[in-house]
Length: 139
Image (cartoon, rainbow, N blue to C red):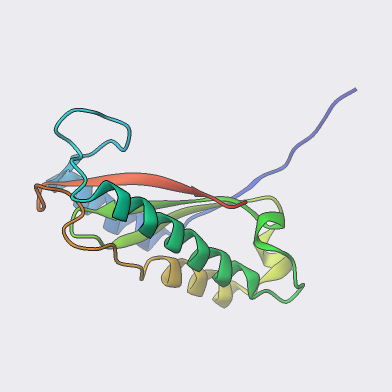
């Protein structure tokens, strides 16, 4: 017996190019490290903002033509967090084809909306030198 699981991965070339330009000039921060990077300016507030950001992303996904719940559409949303607090939606990993629940324009709008969130500044103690790549799990 075989179990076939299909996932759909979506990204936008222009956004990935923008991310790659930033990566060439900055160093990566790691979410899980205890070293000096990242030194979250206020870790509890950062976690609170991540929860708010997740709810915002879920609200965007909820607005679909089939009325499906976000957790029935998307596994996760990978995003790029610049040290100034700006976000860029890097990738959406979905359980169903997004084209079944959104138009092509709505998918692009989804990437744009997810990338408009701005975390409190400064995100880290040493702004101007790095970035972090994170995932939001949609449950």
